[in-house]
Length: 221
Image (cartoon, rainbow, N blue to C red; front, side):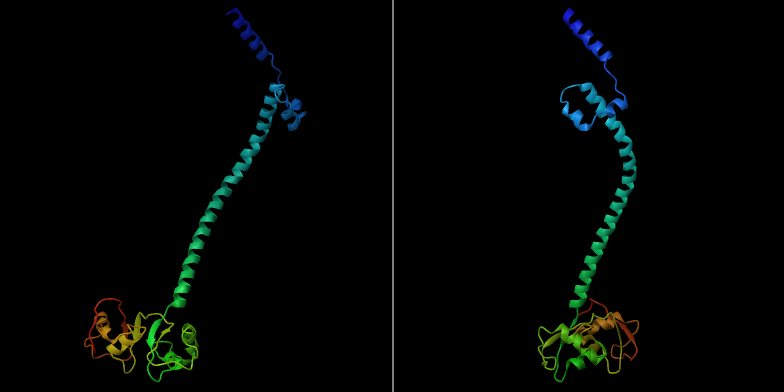
């Protein structure tokens, strides 16, 4: 018991009289010198690293105050980049869809690409025939040689409305590629335009018909 008390008193005395170091004292040492001390002069080493930390803390706090807003800005920019990438991906999909879109047209005797392009429900301009050729170049080796009965793709979208011209009737309109490509679908036109058409056998040039998608099927006119 007496021995234990002596050890405690010695330890207390050692701590009480431990050397304190000033900043000037610590500045005399380099980091390499402190690290080279190993287990020698632990008090000096502790004092040195506490001083280094005290010097670094304000700098860290200052930089952190500047970095946090930059991180927030970076995150906002990254979100914008992600959205732009999604938009670009969607646009590429739309470009491919439009590039590959079109309506089927079955060639009849006497037709040429120029004539098909000139139809009012396609381009209304025969000089647009190269667009049809380009869309079907995998199947047409010579644009001057097309054959009745073959089906080609005319690169125009499906119509959402149609303006009646002279000689039109509902069955004929329904048969156009941009409409239904089937004359038997004429009842859809009639049902979708009952506000404009009282008699399905009476339509007039200049009338603008809505082309409904889905609904009544079948029938003849």
